[in-house]
Image (cartoon, rainbow, N blue to C red; front, side):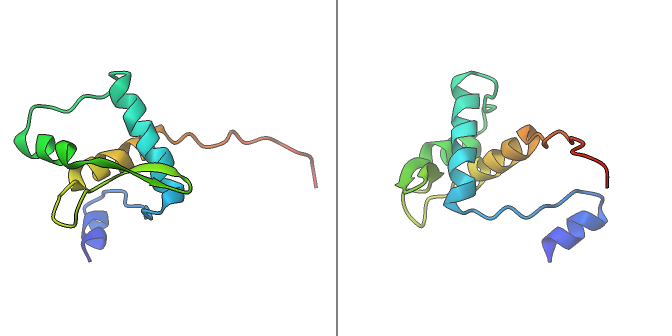
Length: 100
């Protein structure tokens, strides 16, 4: 399993289910980072191809980045979306509610 090999090399691996509940907010986060120019893609032909292949797919939970067809590859953009969502995730501050 590739994730186990990466973990042995010291890389932190987390599960990231590509459900609408997770992908819709993450797609919005990536879109805003691009529009606000906090994030730009380097000039690389494969990245440009993957970005050009992205479409908006609407669901009951909002919209998300998706491929227009099965053969269209957008893996690098989805990976970027996942990494950005993980990097910007801020845990809730811990509050003391009382003593037991």
